Image (cartoon, rainbow, N blue to C red; front, side, top):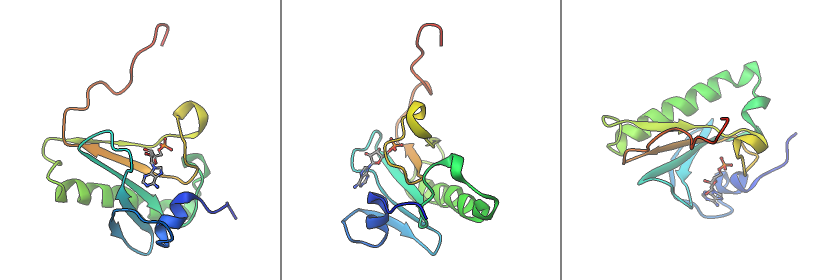
Length: 120
Ligand code: AMP
């Protein structure tokens, strides 16, 4: 069993967060350090450390995460202009919290996907 994370404590409300949606599979809450006017994290209730740890049985959960992101984007009024979904994986992906999370960001033009470096 993967270890509990800070996000597990948010799911069971041991630590406070601005939860915008919760069901039996996923929880969504506002990022504590938003990078855009809307910045919501959608996470599985079960600890899955990284996107690389997904199993076939997790397909309903990952599908729910994306559908919930889509619904929140509509509710926040950012869907028509567009938004970005990001999953960071491990060190090179810039992952800080080892509890899979989908970043939903929008509410302004987000610019290029990556800052390009010489030689890529
Ligand atoms: P990542 O770098 O993809 O692992 O993203 C982790 C995200 O979690 C960052 O955007 C943090 O600002 C966010 N975060 C960390 N702790 C909390 C918390 N207690 N409540 C809400 N967001 C958090």
